[in-house]
Image 1 (cartoon, rainbow, N blue to C red):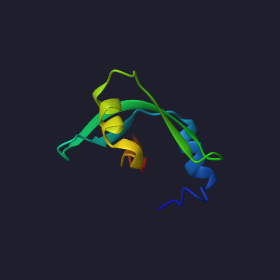
Image 2: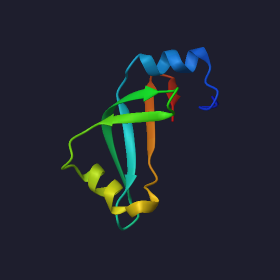
Image 3: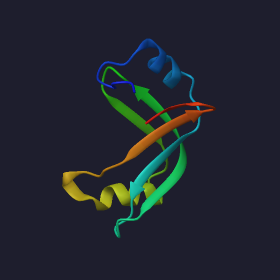
Image 4: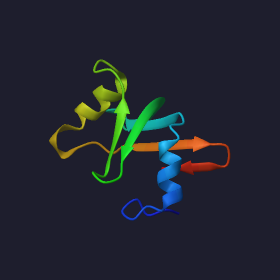
Length: 84
């Protein structure tokens, strides 16, 4: 498993390849909402940016979490490789 705080060159190269990702957010009732998305990853800033529109369910789920923030997971996969 790669440590995202100290990523290997292979891990960073995988994220530069830009495969389809999944984004998992939690609905207000606590059930998961999983959707395909495009993601860019900035390891220096420690930020994954999800490409989406502001009127989507995923954005509503994140905003519904309030000021304490939302728990989310981003996973990029290609064949037998993945990073979450």
